[in-house]
Length: 313
Image 1 (cartoon, rainbow, N blue to C red):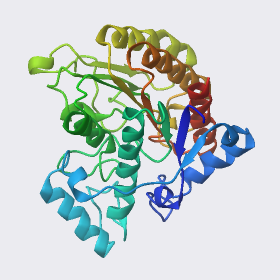
Image 2 (image 1 turned 60 degrees about the vertical axis):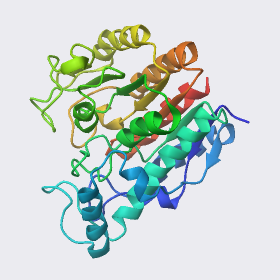
Image 3 (image 1 turned 90 degrees about the horizontal axis):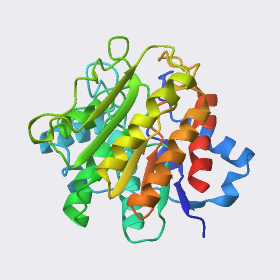
Image 4 (image 1 turned 180 degrees about the vertical axis):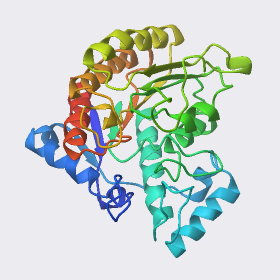
């Protein structure tokens, strides 16, 4: 059996928006076509998406917000936020498959079935506890962190984010939690949504000084990535996590239609390989990678498969 499992299926793919929205339901298929082309499909375990129940969502989200998504899911009209995240019929169920696949992956990892997992449609890092934001209805990353504490007694969690956009929904939810290591390498918020993640944002209260935000200039390339990345590995080695979550957004790769970064897929491969080494040293190999953002289909295909290859090494 392969050491890497991938969640794949139409139930996961349908978390996406139509009418030319950049986060379309075709993203998973773009990734998988390249996986097959590279022959990586023969080296991984394929797992079917799993839906979560409402109780799981309430570990992170407010009951009022979950009910609001359910109503919007029935009507399929309007927006879940102020204009980025359209409602559609079935958005609640589609979001539940994203979160549920993460949680099924977490169970398999903790129980020793599969130390490494990649979930292409996941990493919805902008959603807040009480609201949607930035194409994200439910924050699966936040639900995973809360579930680690509630169900498995695992507290020292490392969340690493290389999406071009700052993972604000995760950062502010755990800004005062010293047991969540947060390392986010992103396009400077002065130039890109959501406008957060300044280097001075290092946590507050008991967690003051424990978070790592690395804003990067628009147009930053692989050379800039390699200058910044060692700070992430040093930070994690000092923290000694029990599990690593990677949000591997491909919108930091050159040519994305809504960002200005210029990484190549090699940066994603390098980040994933480094995190695998740290996971092997401190976490019994436990790492979950989530596809995150990315709106150029070629970049999604190449970037996410670069992560897959690194996780197979």
